[in-house]
Image 1 (cartoon, rainbow, N blue to C red):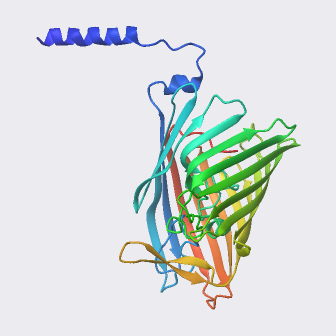
Image 2 (tube, rainbow, N blue to C red):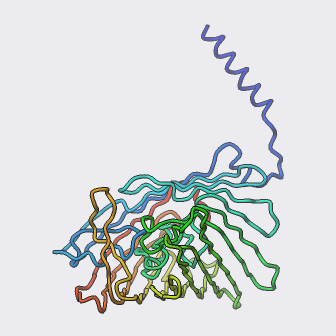
Image 3 (cartoon, rainbow, N blue to C red):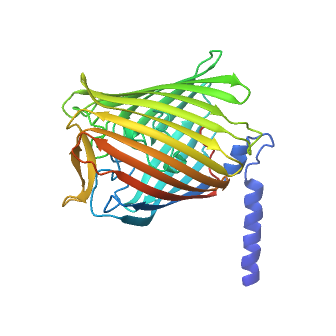
Amino acid sequence: MRLRFRALLFLGAVGSALSAPALRADAPPSLQSNLMNPLISLNALFLGEASPDRAKSTYNPDILSPGLFTKGPGPHYSLQLQEAELSVQSVVDSNFKLNANLTFANDGVSPEEVFATTTSLPEVQVKVGKFKSNFGKLGNIHLHMFPFILPVLAYENTIGGEGFNGQGAEASWMTPLPWFLELTGGGFTGKNSADSPALDISGARRDDFAYVAHAKNFFDLGGDATLELGASALSGHTNVGETQRVTGFDLTLKDSPPQNVSGHNWIFQNEWLQKATGTVKQQEGWYSSLQYRLGFAWWVGARTERTFRIPGDAYSATGTVDSGGNALYSQVNGDERRHTLELAWAPGEFTEIRLDASYGDVRGNGDTTPDRRILFQFNHTIGTHPAHNF
């Protein structure tokens, strides 16, 4: 009986192999590798923090100024799982590719991105689903690829610490101009301030949408130097029908020899953002950063940033929740500043350890307590992770 069962299994396996469609030798490598199994990777971020000025950590990239105004008897020390991200992607057929990113954090599991991308349209790429929109220089990158550990203040106070993540569709067109110019436009279902206190584009009507536009210019300056210029805009309606807009401009200079990973590469990045509702400007801010490669595995960096506010308009997390579990926020007046120094060790593509020293304060709020922090981040990736934006 056991011999007959094994014989049936063998015949079934042979029959399946003979009936399976043959893969052409000239099929794209991505199709060959993903014919049966998707590409899967897992990224884990561990965060350590020491601060003499804060009583408890309120780090959350989706809220304003994570913990900057949460004062209390220090010092505060913590070591926590900041985030784990499971990434799955595969070619569906000759026309579409599917991506999914699931994030695991202290507050649960959530689908950060799930979207389909066209692969066969000439010079145009369309994305449909839930994803990070192409807004700004940092808007569509994931947390583990942030240039510095803390999100940018200007993002937190205008569009959200990790950019605008919505449900909708977006199309990108590579123009036929003599230089690299990519134009992107998209429409998204509105989202309310419970999702991101910095932004209220929930819409006065059910059919209200938020619209995003982005232009990316890329120039070769000769040698290994490049210049990137970008412009972004987001527009939607608040729950009372007012138009809320966020605009931004970015400039990046980069010298990165592709064949010399041990060379002294550098990246000089700058961005300015502004938010307005109706005709009233509410938030404005900028940052400027420089990253320099000391050798094969070592990087150093510095970033300075500042935001300007209309008094009484900005909100910051208090670190507490109400009876329903919703985060509570308090009004913040004044201008916020932060300066950061960073040392990073990246011995390979899949491991990076960073040490950041950050100093921040707010002017005009009646609170002179500084926000001083030392942050450690351990960044590890396993599996086949897709390439990141240049």
